[in-house]
Structures are given as structure tokens and as C-alpha cells.
Image (tube, rainbow, N blue to C red; front, side, top):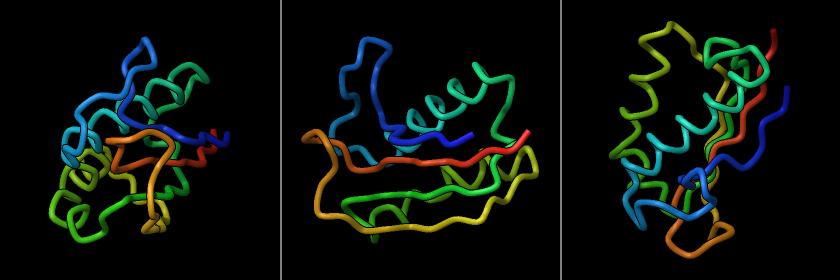
Length: 102
């Protein structure tokens, strides 16, 4: 399953936590987890994770948010981090794209 563009959006499609890297990482991961759950999978099914960010240095400061959530369930997908000029909406600083296998 290919999951694209998981960002820090509310259930109503509104951006959340403007410019807050840690909070956006957590909510983006929650949203990725919700998409996977709809397909009967979980974060444990991730085999690849792409992380897009507008600030690589700040992402490294808060990478523990992501690493700890994945580490608790014992999953270590191959990961690529890409610095980008901007994301789709102002205030978004991180976006997750995952590939999961059942």
C-alpha cells in the first residue's frame, strides 16, 4: 500500500500546529497510522518511509518523535529524508509518505 502526503491536518482538513516540527511529526504519524488502519495494517507494516521537510536541521532536533514511535513497535523501515523549499500549505513543515506491506 502506498500512502502519500500525510501531514499535520485535522479530520476537517485544516492544517494544525503551524511551524511546530514536533507536533506536526506526531500528528502526521497519527494520520499515517489512521490510513494504514483503514486498510487493516499498522505502522508495523511500513517497509519504506519518506520524510519531506522544509527544515532538515530542525527535523533532526525532533526526529526522536518519529524514531521513538517506530522503535516501540520494533519497526525500522528504510527511510529517506528530503529537504524541500515548501510543502502544499503555508505553515506545514513536515510530510510523511509511506509504503506498507501486509
